[in-house]
Length: 350
Image (cartoon, rainbow, N blue to C red; front, side, top):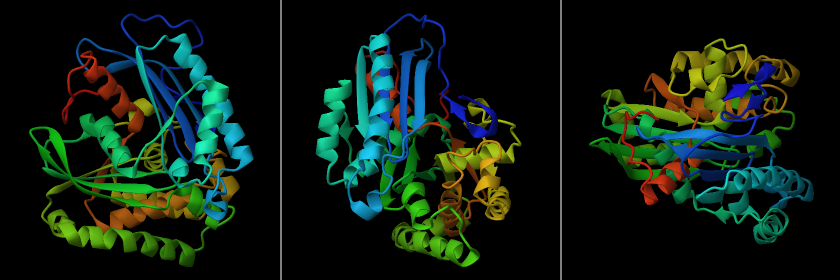
């Protein structure tokens, strides 16, 4: 993925000239609470896939959803504008197979069915609202190549716009077994709306960490995760805009660069240092930071609080950063179903 100055992201695989590729193309669309993302890719002979076109736009579909329980007219219009672009790219690439999914905002919205009918009528796209469990499964499939073969147990988490998923896994011969997972109904969009312009005083920040930990603690106790962490028997992998943004800041990137972030490690002391620095800035100051920009400036502190809650509950010491997730999981499965891609295992090239 490439970006402009101050974190304005241009998707990897984007093209200004006609697309030139051989072999069947596949498309995966992920409509989240905050972002609308598309990947179009072709399988590679050596395994995995090559992105030939992509799209990503912040649409804030879940804006105001926590208060009203419904998708707002403005949010739906913004999202449909983005989906028209996605539909055009899918059609242009003549894909062999595609899957389009929606997550937390559409799971929660009382008017989701009306919205999906409008999407189909205005864009031709049929989007499936998936369960939290299916979301977890696809995220894990997409991130699988970044998991290490050791330790055998792992925590994988995704801080989304409307929810946060945490997965407890065991790796067996390079493939993960999902032992349990939780979906916390808190993400960067609904939390940032709770606090207005994104400012969090120390007391609010600490209360938010405690609120998140209230969900994590029983999950931790149920599986003895804290004890496994103390033994050094747990690896951690995070996928979200929060994690990738903090990684970019930690690397000192003048602009976001997916090739340097995806698969990098982020130490917990670096997370604490960066979060403390960001908390000392106002919204304009955060917007001026490379890898953040104005579209994410009011969201990042909420994400920092969720991330710090996870790190405090399970002090693994470092986490691996994934700039990948649902779309990559969908693409792998579409290609495998048609015999165009070998199954991926942990530590396999992605």
